[in-house]
Image (cartoon, rainbow, N blue to C red):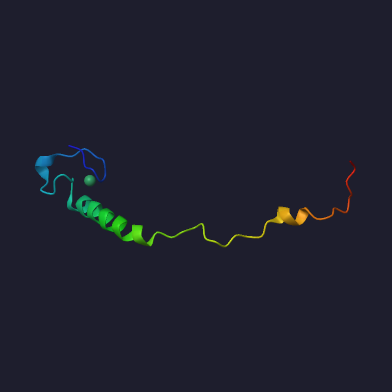
Length: 69
Ligand SMILES: [Zn+2]
């Protein structure tokens, strides 16, 4: 039988924490569920309104080298 947490094969007759191989894996899976539930509502938004100045816009002004064309 394969443990859904650590993905390792184990003997189901040697544990009473099925379907997990051990109490540790059972708690890890439980914590994962609770963790996701806790994280989702507070998901941070990396793409805020603030954006850094665009350096290309400044280059659009007159160039000292002049346009050869
Ligand atoms: Zn396991």
